[in-house]
Image (tube, rainbow, N blue to C red; front, top):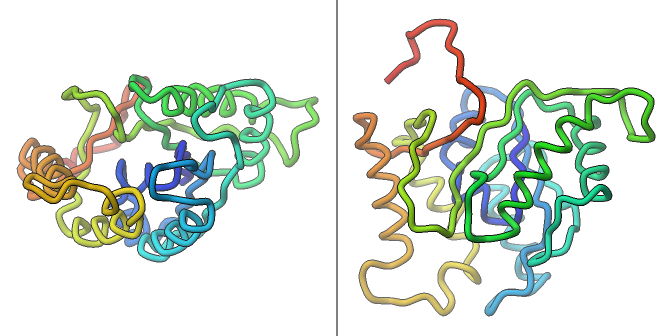
Length: 226
């Protein structure tokens, strides 16, 4: 499984609980951050690298790399598509996870367009891409969005048992979510928990993470439904 994130912390915010759940099920999971996420008001390249290392350990990831594309001006251009397609061919993930395709943040929108284009390119023959052709079976979209909207997800994953560890991974990014944040209630973390509880309530659990998909989601049986 490969989660593609526009910036370090997007994977944790959007699907940190599901990453932990996948790992607990014995699956190999990696994250590819497209940019460093810098500049930000309280961060730096060095700070963000250290925070990402700590969050990676909290998530127990098998792989985490950064493609080094420009923050704040991420584009789904041919050069970036070539880099990402080559990474996909070399890592050969079964599924790809990308941000939801509607967002106020241009980097998030560009990231999803880039993932979709790179997935197609990764399967091509007679190219100068590294590795052998590979086509991930699915793209699922996680929600780490800047728009105040209530999405209609394709499915919601129960992360009740993973919630506290997800929160720990997010709190590794002190420069983004602690420094300069308002202290009065509700805090950023209060709101984060409320959102997770909302999605949990929608499926009858304590906490949940929503996912979208442009394609229908198939089930081999109904035994896994909550």
